Amino acid sequence: MTYFVYLIVSNLKKNKKISYVGYTNNLKKRLSLHNTGRGAKFTRGKKWKLVYYEKYDSKSIAMKREFEIKKNYKLRRQIKEK
Image (cartoon, rainbow, N blue to C red):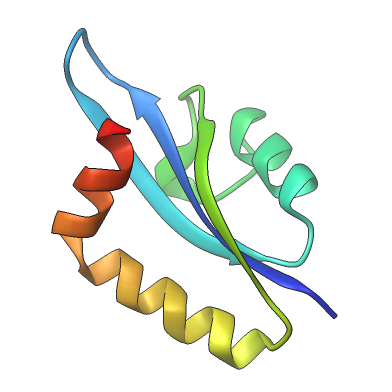
């Protein structure tokens, strides 16, 4: 099975963006859940845009990579600004 690690971004105000990192095996469905208020609690009530994803063949590797990206705020900021 294929897994994706993804980064989504939402605009709070003019120049203020927030990001969320997650993993899933169905990227399109997961983004839809985030945008309809049925995703993670943190993402509810905001409009999200997919800005980055990586593809993996193993769930455990995808989970490890998700953890790395979540903790690396410098990398997240660089990706958001692209």
